[in-house]
Image (cartoon, rainbow, N blue to C red; front, side):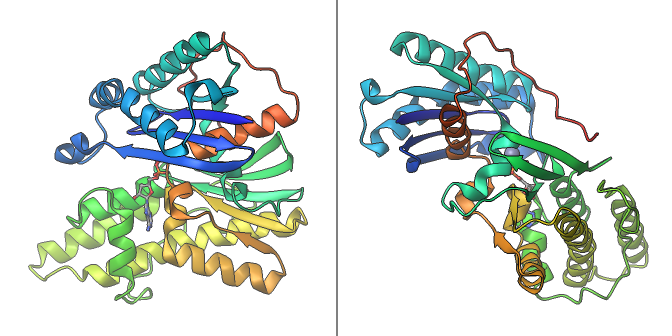
Length: 333
Ligand code: KG4
Ligand code: ZN
């Protein structure tokens, strides 16, 4: 079975081809047009998708070494994400599916992140826990079956990646901030500043990063006001530790309480070296298999969209031409 997938939910134009469950191509074009603005400009994102989509889809098809006529099904992200961006991918996918006469599967972007750890690793057994941490989402999922999952908790304010990005911006580290904080943290002392661990002691699986953001802002303002240079490495190490501590603690509690054999992390923040290391150590201690996707499957990509479509096909879920875009993120229960 050959599936062509398209992902345009945010600022990456992506397309991939999956043949019998194996990734044959995974093409991603990150838009540089936003660099000038310190964040994503939705209007510019949709215009870039329009400009790039044909070449990205063509590249995915030619890199996979297939012809258009080999495609058995198309998958496309229909939400959540930026409305204008989603529209470009969905229209393109509907047109192509119509032209080729193949079924079309609308796929939920976060569901695709949730299962992305299992693109290359078939060790998934149920129940299982997945922590999805990106610039737009921070949630713990309980996977109960191949197409059944439940959100145990989500952020009630900023997403983890957003917290990384905003904290980096306060220190003038540019956008996106996560990779820069990760780098600086390696040379810093994580105990230099006692930053708050939002909602860590609560029973709920919800997260909050706004208190941390305010605390970092206060320290940065105080040091800057005193004329001293900012201890960037220590600030990064301490802020990163505060974020990672809460993510790991809550994910491991969810794993224990639900008696799972595997835990996966996914999304852009799952690239964070301390998060990967800390989750790996804690899972090893608990006798749990830890799954961290390769980098190209952590970030937004279309291979993960094709993968969920493949699961749908395998479980007889019907295709659809009449779906709408669903820009809004799913909420915690
Ligand atoms: O999943 P993603 O590529 O896009 C979406 O938001 O959907 O995630 C991007 C986020 C950004 O906030 C970025 O700062 C963060 O992932 N990120 C990291 C690292 N690499 C990327 N955060 C912490 N440490 C990293 N190494
Ligand atoms: Zn994403």
